[in-house]
Length: 339
Image 1 (cartoon, one colour):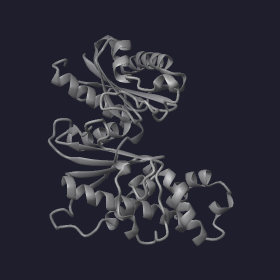
Image 2: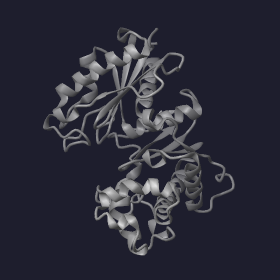
Image 3: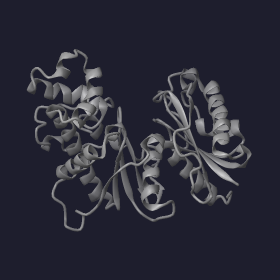
Protein backbone atom coordinates (compact mmCIF):
# COMPACT_ATOMS: atom_id res chain seq x y z
CA UNK A 1 0.00 0.00 0.00
CA UNK A 2 1.54 3.27 -1.13
CA UNK A 3 1.23 6.19 1.27
CA UNK A 4 2.34 9.76 1.88
CA UNK A 5 3.55 11.13 5.21
CA UNK A 6 2.99 14.39 7.01
CA UNK A 7 5.62 15.89 9.34
CA UNK A 8 4.84 18.89 11.55
CA UNK A 9 8.12 20.25 12.94
CA UNK A 10 7.51 22.43 16.01
CA UNK A 11 9.69 23.91 18.69
CA UNK A 12 9.55 21.01 21.13
CA UNK A 13 8.01 18.12 19.23
CA UNK A 14 7.56 16.68 15.76
CA UNK A 15 4.14 15.26 14.95
CA UNK A 16 3.67 12.63 12.24
CA UNK A 17 0.85 11.08 10.27
CA UNK A 18 0.37 8.87 7.22
CA UNK A 19 -2.30 9.11 4.52
CA UNK A 20 -3.22 6.52 1.89
CA UNK A 21 -4.53 7.03 -1.64
CA UNK A 22 -8.13 6.70 -0.37
CA UNK A 23 -7.57 9.78 1.80
CA UNK A 24 -7.64 7.76 5.00
CA UNK A 25 -5.38 8.85 7.86
CA UNK A 26 -3.57 5.86 9.32
CA UNK A 27 -2.72 7.50 12.66
CA UNK A 28 -5.70 8.91 14.53
CA UNK A 29 -4.12 10.92 17.33
CA UNK A 30 -0.85 12.58 18.14
CA UNK A 31 2.28 10.66 17.13
CA UNK A 32 5.15 12.71 18.53
CA UNK A 33 8.93 12.52 18.60
CA UNK A 34 11.30 15.02 20.24
CA UNK A 35 12.32 18.02 18.14
CA UNK A 36 15.95 19.09 18.31
CA UNK A 37 15.84 22.01 15.92
CA UNK A 38 17.83 24.19 18.31
CA UNK A 39 20.80 21.84 17.86
CA UNK A 40 21.08 22.55 14.14
CA UNK A 41 20.07 20.97 10.82
CA UNK A 42 22.11 17.76 10.96
CA UNK A 43 20.72 16.59 14.30
CA UNK A 44 17.19 17.81 13.55
CA UNK A 45 16.93 16.01 10.20
CA UNK A 46 18.23 12.84 11.84
CA UNK A 47 15.48 13.16 14.45
CA UNK A 48 12.83 13.58 11.73
CA UNK A 49 14.03 10.46 9.94
CA UNK A 50 14.12 8.38 13.11
CA UNK A 51 10.66 9.55 14.08
CA UNK A 52 9.29 8.64 10.65
CA UNK A 53 10.46 5.05 11.13
CA UNK A 54 8.69 4.87 14.50
CA UNK A 55 5.53 6.48 13.11
CA UNK A 56 5.45 4.10 10.13
CA UNK A 57 5.40 1.15 12.49
CA UNK A 58 2.58 2.74 14.46
CA UNK A 59 0.63 3.28 11.22
CA UNK A 60 1.27 -0.31 10.14
CA UNK A 61 2.99 0.66 6.89
CA UNK A 62 6.47 0.26 5.41
CA UNK A 63 8.37 3.50 5.07
CA UNK A 64 9.72 2.18 1.78
CA UNK A 65 6.17 2.44 0.40
CA UNK A 66 5.87 6.13 1.31
CA UNK A 67 6.23 8.02 -1.96
CA UNK A 68 6.23 11.66 -0.72
CA UNK A 69 6.85 13.31 2.64
CA UNK A 70 5.07 16.57 3.39
CA UNK A 71 6.80 18.92 5.84
CA UNK A 72 5.59 22.01 7.64
CA UNK A 73 7.51 24.35 9.94
CA UNK A 74 7.04 27.79 11.43
CA UNK A 75 8.24 30.62 9.21
CA UNK A 76 9.51 32.83 7.87
CA UNK A 77 10.62 30.72 4.94
CA UNK A 78 10.24 30.74 1.18
CA UNK A 79 7.44 28.87 -0.57
CA UNK A 80 9.90 26.03 -1.28
CA UNK A 81 11.24 25.71 2.26
CA UNK A 82 14.34 27.92 2.37
CA UNK A 83 14.45 29.34 5.90
CA UNK A 84 14.97 33.04 6.37
CA UNK A 85 18.59 34.21 6.41
CA UNK A 86 17.62 36.43 9.34
CA UNK A 87 16.44 33.50 11.42
CA UNK A 88 13.14 31.67 11.78
CA UNK A 89 10.93 30.73 14.70
CA UNK A 90 12.40 27.72 16.59
CA UNK A 91 15.46 27.67 14.30
CA UNK A 92 17.96 29.60 16.39
CA UNK A 93 21.09 27.64 15.51
CA UNK A 94 23.21 29.70 13.06
CA UNK A 95 23.43 26.84 10.55
CA UNK A 96 19.71 27.23 9.83
CA UNK A 97 20.23 30.65 8.22
CA UNK A 98 19.18 30.33 4.57
CA UNK A 99 18.93 26.54 4.96
CA UNK A 100 16.81 24.67 2.39
CA UNK A 101 15.03 22.35 4.79
CA UNK A 102 12.76 20.75 2.19
CA UNK A 103 15.56 19.87 -0.23
CA UNK A 104 17.82 18.55 2.51
CA UNK A 105 15.05 16.46 4.07
CA UNK A 106 14.36 14.99 0.63
CA UNK A 107 18.03 14.03 0.29
CA UNK A 108 18.08 12.61 3.82
CA UNK A 109 15.06 10.38 3.16
CA UNK A 110 15.71 9.61 -0.49
CA UNK A 111 12.16 10.68 -1.33
CA UNK A 112 10.42 13.76 -2.73
CA UNK A 113 9.38 16.24 -0.05
CA UNK A 114 6.88 19.11 -0.12
CA UNK A 115 6.81 22.18 2.11
CA UNK A 116 4.25 24.47 3.75
CA UNK A 117 4.54 26.87 6.65
CA UNK A 118 2.60 25.64 9.68
CA UNK A 119 -0.25 28.14 9.26
CA UNK A 120 -0.88 27.12 5.67
CA UNK A 121 -0.71 23.44 6.62
CA UNK A 122 -3.36 23.92 9.29
CA UNK A 123 -5.51 25.87 6.85
CA UNK A 124 -5.26 23.09 4.26
CA UNK A 125 -6.38 20.54 6.85
CA UNK A 126 -9.38 22.64 7.84
CA UNK A 127 -10.32 23.04 4.20
CA UNK A 128 -9.96 19.30 3.60
CA UNK A 129 -12.33 18.46 6.46
CA UNK A 130 -15.03 20.71 5.02
CA UNK A 131 -14.60 20.13 1.31
CA UNK A 132 -12.33 17.16 0.63
CA UNK A 133 -9.06 17.36 -1.27
CA UNK A 134 -10.59 17.75 -4.73
CA UNK A 135 -13.42 20.14 -4.00
CA UNK A 136 -13.14 23.47 -5.81
CA UNK A 137 -13.83 25.79 -2.91
CA UNK A 138 -12.29 28.75 -1.11
CA UNK A 139 -11.69 29.04 2.64
CA UNK A 140 -9.90 31.43 5.00
CA UNK A 141 -8.37 30.08 8.22
CA UNK A 142 -7.10 32.05 11.22
CA UNK A 143 -5.13 30.08 13.80
CA UNK A 144 -4.76 31.86 17.14
CA UNK A 145 -1.74 30.95 19.24
CA UNK A 146 1.24 32.83 20.59
CA UNK A 147 0.98 34.75 17.34
CA UNK A 148 -1.62 34.45 14.60
CA UNK A 149 -1.14 32.24 11.58
CA UNK A 150 -3.48 30.87 9.00
CA UNK A 151 -3.94 30.51 5.32
CA UNK A 152 -5.97 31.14 2.21
CA UNK A 153 -7.15 28.16 0.17
CA UNK A 154 -8.54 28.98 -3.29
CA UNK A 155 -10.04 26.22 -5.44
CA UNK A 156 -8.44 23.71 -3.10
CA UNK A 157 -4.92 25.17 -3.46
CA UNK A 158 -2.80 26.94 -0.85
CA UNK A 159 -1.96 30.54 -1.71
CA UNK A 160 1.80 30.69 -1.07
CA UNK A 161 2.67 33.85 -2.96
CA UNK A 162 5.79 35.00 -4.79
CA UNK A 163 8.17 34.67 -1.82
CA UNK A 164 6.17 32.36 0.45
CA UNK A 165 4.45 35.09 2.44
CA UNK A 166 0.97 34.35 1.12
CA UNK A 167 -1.41 33.76 3.99
CA UNK A 168 0.52 35.87 6.53
CA UNK A 169 -2.86 36.86 7.88
CA UNK A 170 -1.65 38.04 11.26
CA UNK A 171 -0.02 41.06 9.67
CA UNK A 172 -3.07 42.36 7.83
CA UNK A 173 -4.05 45.77 9.19
CA UNK A 174 -7.57 46.16 10.58
CA UNK A 175 -9.61 49.23 11.66
CA UNK A 176 -9.20 48.37 15.34
CA UNK A 177 -10.32 51.82 16.47
CA UNK A 178 -13.91 50.76 15.78
CA UNK A 179 -13.89 47.90 18.31
CA UNK A 180 -16.28 48.68 21.15
CA UNK A 181 -14.57 48.86 24.53
CA UNK A 182 -11.05 48.94 23.09
CA UNK A 183 -10.62 52.70 23.16
CA UNK A 184 -7.15 53.73 24.23
CA UNK A 185 -5.44 50.53 23.15
CA UNK A 186 -2.24 50.92 21.11
CA UNK A 187 -1.66 47.46 19.68
CA UNK A 188 1.90 47.12 18.41
CA UNK A 189 2.89 43.82 16.78
CA UNK A 190 6.31 42.21 17.17
CA UNK A 191 6.74 42.81 13.43
CA UNK A 192 6.62 46.56 14.10
CA UNK A 193 3.17 47.30 12.70
CA UNK A 194 0.46 48.97 14.73
CA UNK A 195 -3.03 47.57 14.46
CA UNK A 196 -2.54 44.34 12.55
CA UNK A 197 -4.63 41.30 13.48
CA UNK A 198 -1.90 39.59 15.51
CA UNK A 199 -1.43 42.70 17.65
CA UNK A 200 -5.01 42.21 18.92
CA UNK A 201 -5.78 38.55 18.45
CA UNK A 202 -3.06 36.34 19.93
CA UNK A 203 -1.59 35.31 23.26
CA UNK A 204 1.10 37.96 22.75
CA UNK A 205 -1.63 40.56 22.21
CA UNK A 206 -3.23 39.63 25.54
CA UNK A 207 0.09 40.16 27.31
CA UNK A 208 1.24 43.30 25.50
CA UNK A 209 -1.98 45.17 24.73
CA UNK A 210 -5.19 43.80 26.23
CA UNK A 211 -4.29 43.07 29.85
CA UNK A 212 -2.62 46.52 30.19
CA UNK A 213 -5.87 47.98 28.80
CA UNK A 214 -8.33 46.06 30.98
CA UNK A 215 -6.59 45.51 34.32
CA UNK A 216 -6.92 49.19 35.33
CA UNK A 217 -10.65 48.92 34.62
CA UNK A 218 -10.94 45.94 37.00
CA UNK A 219 -9.00 47.00 40.12
CA UNK A 220 -8.34 44.11 42.46
CA UNK A 221 -8.65 41.47 39.73
CA UNK A 222 -6.68 38.33 40.57
CA UNK A 223 -4.57 38.60 37.40
CA UNK A 224 -3.41 42.03 38.47
CA UNK A 225 -1.93 40.51 41.60
CA UNK A 226 0.42 38.16 39.77
CA UNK A 227 2.93 40.89 38.92
CA UNK A 228 3.74 38.98 35.76
CA UNK A 229 1.78 39.78 32.61
CA UNK A 230 3.35 36.87 30.71
CA UNK A 231 2.03 34.34 33.21
CA UNK A 232 -1.26 36.19 33.61
CA UNK A 233 -1.91 36.09 29.86
CA UNK A 234 -1.78 32.29 29.90
CA UNK A 235 -4.59 32.21 32.48
CA UNK A 236 -7.03 34.42 30.58
CA UNK A 237 -8.54 31.69 28.40
CA UNK A 238 -9.43 29.43 31.33
CA UNK A 239 -10.91 32.29 33.34
CA UNK A 240 -12.89 33.51 30.34
CA UNK A 241 -14.30 30.03 29.82
CA UNK A 242 -15.36 29.92 33.49
CA UNK A 243 -17.22 33.22 33.08
CA UNK A 244 -14.80 35.81 34.46
CA UNK A 245 -16.12 39.19 33.27
CA UNK A 246 -12.80 40.87 32.48
CA UNK A 247 -11.33 37.87 30.71
CA UNK A 248 -14.46 37.48 28.60
CA UNK A 249 -14.06 41.13 27.61
CA UNK A 250 -10.50 40.38 26.51
CA UNK A 251 -11.73 37.52 24.35
CA UNK A 252 -14.62 39.61 23.04
CA UNK A 253 -12.16 42.24 21.78
CA UNK A 254 -10.15 39.47 20.10
CA UNK A 255 -13.30 38.06 18.51
CA UNK A 256 -14.36 41.48 17.22
CA UNK A 257 -10.86 42.05 15.79
CA UNK A 258 -11.24 38.73 13.99
CA UNK A 259 -14.67 39.83 12.79
CA UNK A 260 -13.16 42.95 11.20
CA UNK A 261 -10.48 40.83 9.55
CA UNK A 262 -12.95 38.26 8.25
CA UNK A 263 -15.06 41.08 6.81
CA UNK A 264 -12.02 42.16 4.78
CA UNK A 265 -11.52 38.58 3.59
CA UNK A 266 -15.19 38.20 2.67
CA UNK A 267 -15.00 41.28 0.50
CA UNK A 268 -11.71 40.15 -1.05
CA UNK A 269 -12.31 36.45 -1.71
CA UNK A 270 -16.05 35.79 -1.21
CA UNK A 271 -15.08 32.48 0.46
CA UNK A 272 -17.18 29.38 1.01
CA UNK A 273 -16.13 29.13 4.66
CA UNK A 274 -14.23 30.85 7.45
CA UNK A 275 -12.29 28.70 9.94
CA UNK A 276 -10.87 29.54 13.37
CA UNK A 277 -8.40 27.35 15.23
CA UNK A 278 -5.51 27.33 17.65
CA UNK A 279 -5.04 27.18 21.39
CA UNK A 280 -7.49 30.01 21.99
CA UNK A 281 -10.33 27.65 21.11
CA UNK A 282 -9.16 24.53 22.93
CA UNK A 283 -12.23 24.93 25.10
CA UNK A 284 -15.65 23.42 25.65
CA UNK A 285 -18.18 23.78 22.83
CA UNK A 286 -20.26 26.29 24.76
CA UNK A 287 -17.38 28.77 24.87
CA UNK A 288 -16.49 28.06 21.25
CA UNK A 289 -20.05 28.91 20.18
CA UNK A 290 -19.95 32.12 22.23
CA UNK A 291 -16.67 33.12 20.59
CA UNK A 292 -17.96 32.42 17.07
CA UNK A 293 -21.10 34.45 17.82
CA UNK A 294 -18.89 37.33 18.96
CA UNK A 295 -16.85 37.11 15.75
CA UNK A 296 -20.09 37.46 13.80
CA UNK A 297 -21.16 40.37 16.00
CA UNK A 298 -17.85 42.09 15.27
CA UNK A 299 -18.31 41.93 11.50
CA UNK A 300 -19.73 45.08 9.89
CA UNK A 301 -23.16 44.79 8.26
CA UNK A 302 -22.85 42.74 5.11
CA UNK A 303 -24.88 42.20 2.00
CA UNK A 304 -27.63 39.62 2.36
CA UNK A 305 -25.76 37.33 -0.05
CA UNK A 306 -22.66 37.38 2.20
CA UNK A 307 -24.25 36.99 5.59
CA UNK A 308 -24.63 33.20 5.39
CA UNK A 309 -20.91 32.39 5.05
CA UNK A 310 -20.33 29.82 7.83
CA UNK A 311 -17.66 30.13 10.53
CA UNK A 312 -16.21 26.83 11.73
CA UNK A 313 -13.87 25.73 14.52
CA UNK A 314 -10.77 23.94 13.23
CA UNK A 315 -11.15 20.21 13.99
CA UNK A 316 -8.30 18.12 15.46
CA UNK A 317 -6.25 21.24 16.07
CA UNK A 318 -3.28 19.47 17.65
CA UNK A 319 -2.77 17.29 14.56
CA UNK A 320 -3.78 19.91 11.95
CA UNK A 321 -0.24 20.72 10.83
CA UNK A 322 0.84 17.14 10.16
CA UNK A 323 -2.43 16.33 8.43
CA UNK A 324 -2.25 19.42 6.25
CA UNK A 325 1.34 18.58 5.30
CA UNK A 326 0.22 15.06 4.37
CA UNK A 327 -2.59 16.43 2.17
CA UNK A 328 -0.06 18.68 0.41
CA UNK A 329 2.11 15.61 -0.19
CA UNK A 330 -0.89 13.68 -1.50
CA UNK A 331 -1.70 16.44 -3.99
CA UNK A 332 1.92 16.43 -5.18
CA UNK A 333 1.92 12.63 -5.51
CA UNK A 334 -1.27 12.64 -7.57
CA UNK A 335 -0.06 15.46 -9.81
CA UNK A 336 3.17 13.61 -10.48
CA UNK A 337 1.44 10.21 -10.80
CA UNK A 338 3.32 8.69 -7.88
CA UNK A 339 0.13 7.14 -6.47
